[in-house]
Each structure stands twice: as structure tokens, then as C-alpha cells.
Image 1 (tube, one colour):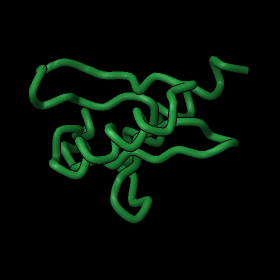
Image 2 (image 1 turned 180 degrees about the horizontal axis):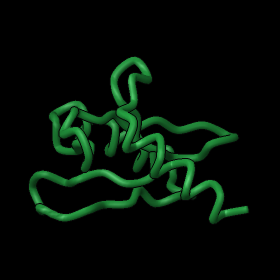
Image 3 (image 1 turned 60 degrees about the horizontal axis):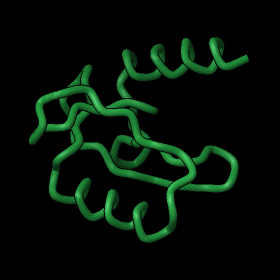
Length: 80
């Protein structure tokens, strides 16, 4: 998923793409502290990064809530 609730800043946050590896590692460390949560189910989110999907937030063990799945489907449809 592309968006998460940032608990410290109390706002919706979209993770930037094209970040250097050091910045991605910083986001991953921040996420481990519970700073990013799902705006729909309030579950803790993790930061992941890859060549194909880029930078994104993920629920634990890919157990996404239904609302986040629907949001991601709308985002992917819009991108096409």
C-alpha cells in the first residue's frame, strides 16, 4: 500500500519513490517503532522496497485488511 498514517505527525503519509538505500533503511527503522499504521484498520505497518513495486507499506505477513486492498486496487487502476 502506498499510504500510511504517521502517528507522530498525525497525518496521512505517502512514501516517496526513488530514495537512496540509506533513506529507505531509515524509513524501515522508523516503521519498526510503530510510527506508521494502516489508516483503515490501525495495524502496524512496515516499509518494504524492491525493484518491481518500489517503496511501499505492508501489513505484517501480508495480512492486509480489506479496505487497504480496495484502496490499492483503486490506485493501481488509476495508474494504468
